Length: 194
Image 1 (cartoon, rainbow, N blue to C red):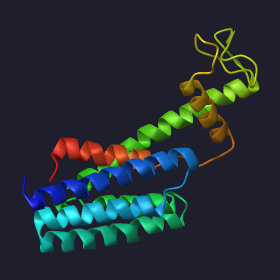
Image 2 (image 1 turned 180 degrees about the vertical axis):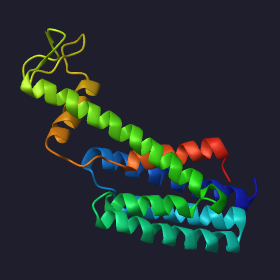
Image 3 (image 1 turned 30 degrees about the vertical axis):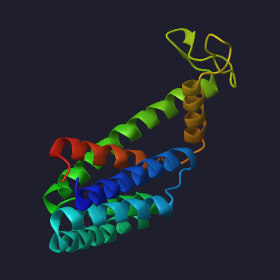
Image 4 (image 1 turned 45 degrees about the vertical axis):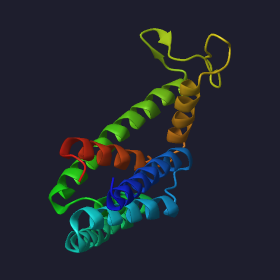
């Protein structure tokens, strides 16, 4: 491997690490850290510079800036969070212009699926809160009761679902960084890494 290939691999690793950190933080705290966005922007911009040259990096920067300004209007109206806007623009920085529409479409589709699942979970958990019955049976049991695995300890998945359900019933916003990660990864898998 040449030094350029090693540097390209390191920048792509920085990009992936930043995306994973942003998605994890958004799921846990509903905040996309600026350090994760900077890692994605740095990794994507440097990868674009190394793989496509200065002209490709400049065009990518202009497209990411235009996308940031466009998505900022959505942030202004409360449709997207500020961290999500920055993360989408940073992800676009590393993509060729020909794949920008595919990236945005994949992110939007992943976001729709994620939002649908979370809204379905909120509805399902809301039924638990109010003790409604489905097909003549209680859905979960009494409020606060958490079912457990074989050893008697609550399973992590059930705790996560319960926590997300409580957040949803409290009106907490939907995390969008995981959708950005899934859409970005899907675009990379479908179109190939460049």
